[in-house]
Length: 261
Image (cartoon, rainbow, N blue to C red):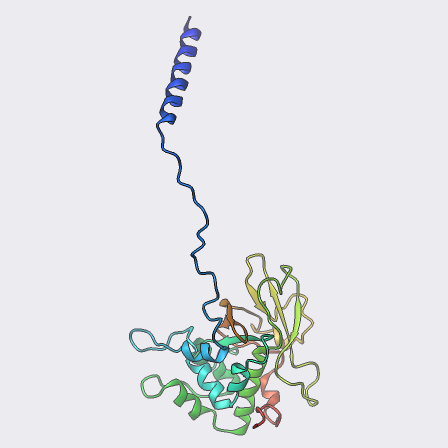
């Protein structure tokens, strides 16, 4: 008898649940909106135009760590604007060097102060442009700066997808740093890889075909931000420098300037 009563209770509860469900409103239909703008926000800009625009300071007038004030000043000082502002090809990847790389101490090997052997930025008394003008004061430092900027431009369009089609695989490219007969190896070469979360690493150590100088000591670098699509290529932001071989090897070169038209 008890078992029979339990079945009756369960049946009553089931009927009540069905009745309640009939009173629920139909769920809202979530269709994809066709008015959402999915275009690239910087697609009408060159890399140079974007770099110049990303120089707005913080509210307290200090420079943003991930801004590009120093890079813009460095490009002007090096006379390499045309490499970033060209519109002849979209087969370019610009590794954009954040302010953070220029303000790190000389004890940090991947910062520009250590690479270029330059003094500290005096934020209270000079702008980024005045600083670059002050510290790039010899032909050797100018050559080294030009080598840095040229190595951070890749002569292919490297997006997370479809360019880096397989996670963990190494993809080899060339940069705009010309090879020098005085330097052993292909100094122009750079490698890209990505993980399953689509984070790009430049010059990773594992399986690298590059010389040890390109990754040992912390030179392998995960990009901070990805896929700034411009009308002349694509950009990725790095908080420090990358390299193939030490930039000091370029101090005596005479082929790193852009020829005057």
